[in-house]
Length: 269
Picture (cartoon, rainbow, N blue to C red):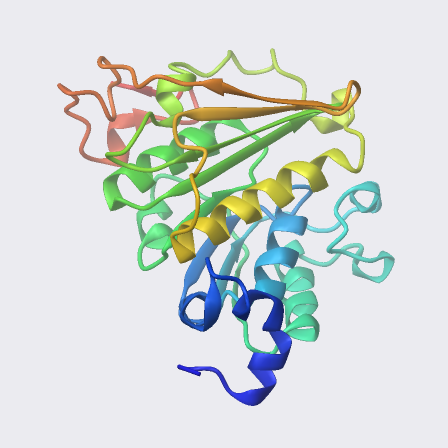
């Protein structure tokens, strides 16, 4: 079969026998490159499932180190990894899981100076960050690069996922025109999160990413998937494109990341 050796045919056999993936789709996965921003609660399942599926190259970006309090939900890391940069821990995990996957661990924070370079040459970007400035930044950088972006977020018992496909649907700014003022939205350290909830949302993000790579099914473009784990309810909410969006609207003039004050209010100047 095209591009797959006997070991790979065995390893990915459950993909190969699927009509929507098949040997050609698996070869495509092995030839794909995905940027994962964040190696924490959401990034852990995303990285695990993409690596297991045979996505050939993963660039993992995170500037944090593993803390013991992370281990309740960040299942990529182990007790022995405490104090280690998350990207190094993640790279070790992937190397042990699947030799077909190469990892570029980038220990840095995504900002307006490096986002364009990080996004370049990747087929999909997965937003596993935990703050609004990074979410807006990735949205804008992916819009400029014409690269699909798979967004996820969690809070206590709740989670959400959205796929942003440039020129084919609304962007993140259509859903959230402005970021809330700093300090008004508590993070996981302040509000907590049920450990399995990032697993739910991260698995959805990984599923969306794989679908995009093999061009199967309908992505969550224009649909916000909302998970309520406490009531075990899942719904999709339509999201319309904002014709006045400063980034993707018909009259948008946005052309560079330097036009936006990301750390202040994420607003286009």
